[in-house]
Length: 148
Length: 148
Image (cartoon, rainbow over all chains, first blue to last red; front, side):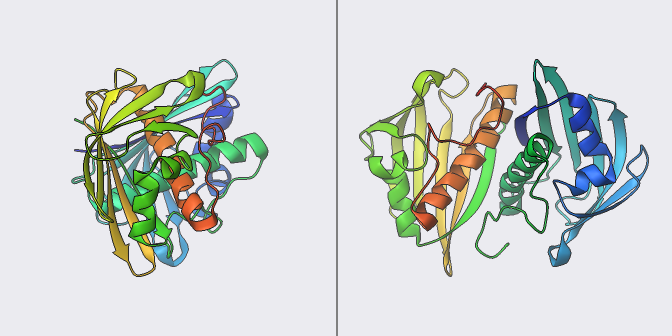
């Protein structure tokens, strides 16, 4: 099954990145401002993207400063049952973020779209930590003409 | 074998996108300013990224306004033998670009890096066509701290 893979390097500590991935305020600062729920292991986080839809993630695994794993439990049909992970590593002054959105059934056009969109959100995560300002929805980077 | 997939929508015609993918000047406007060679079918294009390295692509297929296919004939070991394609489709005012970098032997860390980097270069392609200004190397978007 095809996966979406990305990597970014953030000038920070893995601790700061981990906090941005595991707190509601942190997540709201780079992915979507309308983030709610329980971000502890076994909890469920709701990411609302206005009229465009939403994703619900169950938190499967948290290793402080090292790893975050979510199971997509609600959202677009192509996403449900897929898994999203962030693996963190400190490389001198850089926190290296290895991202994987695994388990897509088919490499459909929507997967192409989500791959590019994930890249822009990971750059938003990087910007939020490095500069204090990310570009979460509704200020997210437009990769198409009509948000489609 | 894992692939890198992306999609962007450019407010333009597929003709304009095709030109940006099939002329040396066009390619130099969004990927690297130091692009040279023969961009016709059977030709070889050299993309130099300063000290960071280079890629040589053999042009395998060109369908005007629809498709571009390259074979990586020189560059990093992980790239040689992989194929890069751009499939274009007109959707009203948007030229939809479906991108694939296919045939990676393994989902190595460098593949994660290249996936994110391709996304930023496709956004550079989009910006070049929509605004007249892309961000080709050496003005490319930094996704890590030290270009690594």
